[in-house]
Image 1 (tube, rainbow, N blue to C red):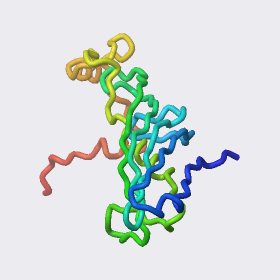
Image 2: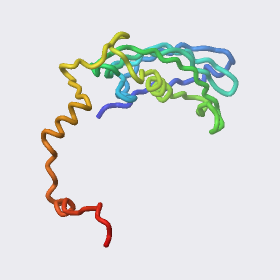
Image 3: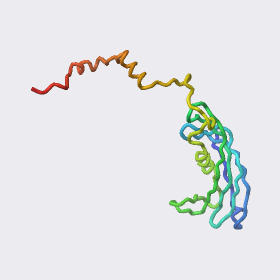
Image 4: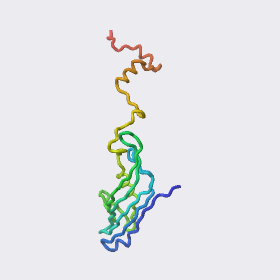
Length: 177
């Protein structure tokens, strides 16, 4: 059974004086996170965060880096890259539920949810393999024009489902008499 990633910081000593700071290194192995057809690559999420004591809580700022894989939006080939996400969160004791502040107990700050959300927001929604990608390869993904579809339908009419055979005899153009 895989262990859940942990990045819990004890900020008790940090909160004794406003403005105190501590650097926190991030190196987490998160489960893959997927947005549309792009997902985190499964490698570590790394970065450096600064935890700073503020009134009634702490502020966490910094950047994380992650690898991702996905499909090119034009040619559908697999593409990979890296992304950087910025974190700027405030953890406050007794934070209101309706605000942008995160509530915490005044001692421990769990950074895994913040890092996880930042990973999801940092993934590209529609990546490209290269900026001048021409689109799908016609050999791999042949296209059919509307005229070709009509000619194909005329050449071989579709086979009727025998369960609907009785409806074939129904003529809806007749006038009731």
